[in-house]
Amino acid sequence: MGRVLGRVFLLLLLIAILAGGGLVWFDYLNVIDAKTILAPVYRLIGLQPRSQTETGEEEFLSLDAERLAIRLEALELRNMEIEQKEEELVSRQDQIEQMAQDLEERQKALDERENSFNAMVEDADIRSRNVEQNARYLNGMPPERAVGIITNMNDQDAIDVLRKTEEIAQAEGSASIVSYWLSLMPPERAAELQRKMAGRPSLRD
Image 1 (cartoon, rainbow, N blue to C red):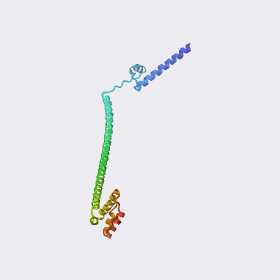
Image 2 (cartoon, helix red, strand yellow; image 1 turned 90 degrees about the vertical axis):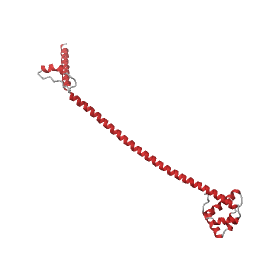
Image 3 (cartoon, helix red, strand yellow; image 1 turned 30 degrees about the horizontal axis):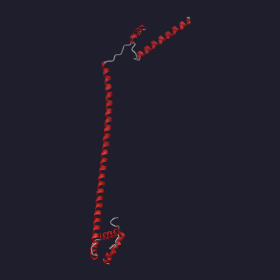
Image 4 (cartoon, rainbow, N blue to C red; image 1 turned 45 degrees about the horizontal axis):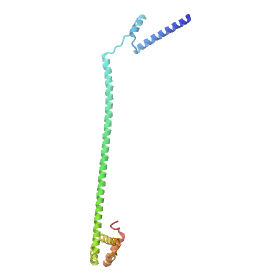
């Protein structure tokens, strides 16, 4: 029984020593403030008690200034990011505007080509109607007079009239007078027109 009590006492003493040592160490590290408790112990063993370090007003101001500097630095970084994004947006907007301008110019070019094509088609239609009207008009007059008019035409107009006359005859199921007209023409003129008619596409092509 006595041995057990002795061991208990030794364990309690060891715990007290460890607790005291830990208390002194934590106080030294300023983790806890135990200077008031430890002051009598320091005096008992002849040591000068440690005084509590007080934070002065200047230190508080320094901490506030440091916090303010950190916030200002963060704001500066944020402003730099915003400025960079603004520059990227401006650059992107310039690219979009350039693309829109290019598309507008291409659209104008396409519109001009379409208008030019439509004008050509309209001119071709007008010419085709005029050629048909002339062919019908010549087909209704005496052959000798019609041949005189055709002979004085330029080659392309004469060829177009002759071909249109043949087309009208085929469509109406009647005999074409083109061969008779050619027989009434001077041989050189008739041969030249026939040669060119064989090599040139028709007006409708």
